[in-house]
Image (cartoon, rainbow, N blue to C red; front, side, top):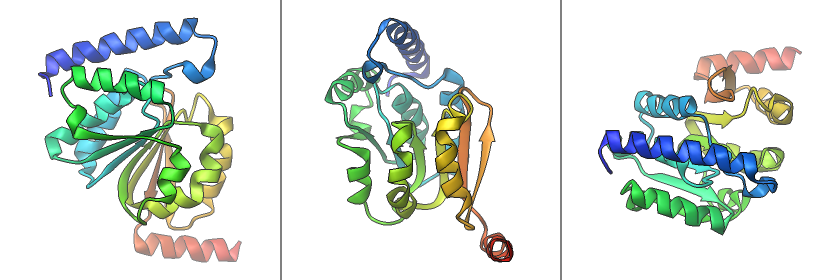
Amino acid sequence: MIPDDQLDALLQKLWQEGHQFDAAEPDPSRRRRNITPSTGRFLELLIQEERPRKILELGTSNGYSTLWLLRAAAALGIPVDSVDQSPDKHAQARVNLTAAQVLDQVQLHTTDAHEFLRHSPSGCWDFIFLDSSRGSYVSWWPELQRCFTPGVLVVDNAVSHASELLPLQMLIDEQPHLERSVLTIGNGQMLVRHRPVAAAGQALVQLGAG
């Protein structure tokens, strides 16, 4: 990985370019829709605190968010997998990851996220960053939940697109072993965690009483 000051400069450049590109691009599917710099820093700090075993990103885009994940992951020696179904966006990501000298530290999967999850082992991810097709999250949820071992799931756009995430939130709230919170960082970050065993049991009792 390139030195931190050079990586900071690259991240700033990609953020500015992505913002300008999206403003001029009429096709929503081609927009980069990068996370905010504050979200990137939050993810970096969260990974440093959580010290997960494996990181999964659903929604690579041009690799901007992937670089934030990788900076924290590289320091801890944590593997990162990133999924996006767009070959064009993964081509952009490879250029940017190569510029940061981290392409060999991430496994890019150019495929449908639902299919990727279906072929992943149960309980294999303890840090998941979800920033993809919001309308698909509900259909992904059974496989996403199956692959999510105790750790943290972070969902972007929890404030900016709160209504679109409401169906997912309802599914999460039906699970007594999960708890969620929303932080007003960037476009809003929804954090989903496994409850401690005792708390999950109490939640199950309360759910049954209701």
